[in-house]
Amino acid sequence: MKKTILTLSMVMFSFLSTNAQESTRIGGYLGYGSEIKTIGLGINAAFPIMENLTLAPSFTYFLPKDESSIVKTTFFELNANANYYFLQDDSFSIYGLAGLNYTNVKVKVEDFGLGFGDASVSEGKIGLNIGGGVNFNLDKNWTPFTELKYVVSNFDQLVLVAGIKFNL
Image 1 (cartoon, helix red, strand yellow):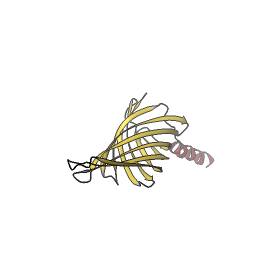
Image 2 (cartoon, rainbow, N blue to C red; image 1 turned 90 degrees about the horizontal axis):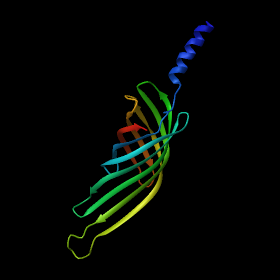
Image 3 (cartoon, rainbow, N blue to C red; image 1 turned 180 degrees about the vertical axis):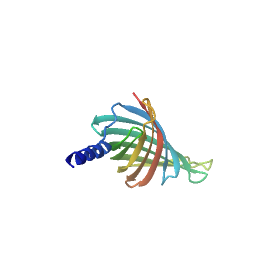
Image 4 (cartoon, rainbow, N blue to C red; image 1 turned 45 degrees about the vertical axis):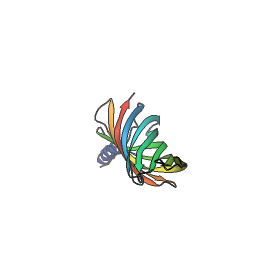
């Protein structure tokens, strides 16, 4: 009975144990912001700092959104996240993320020959990220991934991204 319990415990532990990524990764992605309602292009990296934990900075530039024929809004965000890997398998790795976010919004009004000139205003806010993601371990040199996070700030929004990371 003791051997059975020990064997079952070891099997369960092997399914729950995790190993963080062992190499630095850098990549790119496409994203979508729920508030700006436009596509973003981004770059990211993942630096292992300890077992099951990576530092994951990223930058996303959301394509300009035309509010009207003369008003254009642009967003960009800079993130400093920590990813904690809590489940890893040969084919995928699941992680939770938390971190800091800086979002900048710029609104530009174009003159179109009315004599007033172009005008613009921008504002930046710091917020928090919370979310999670999945790495799909298909190849040892590159890793497709998807991530979902919520940005908590004056510019709250849900951001969904999908992309690829390359091992360095």
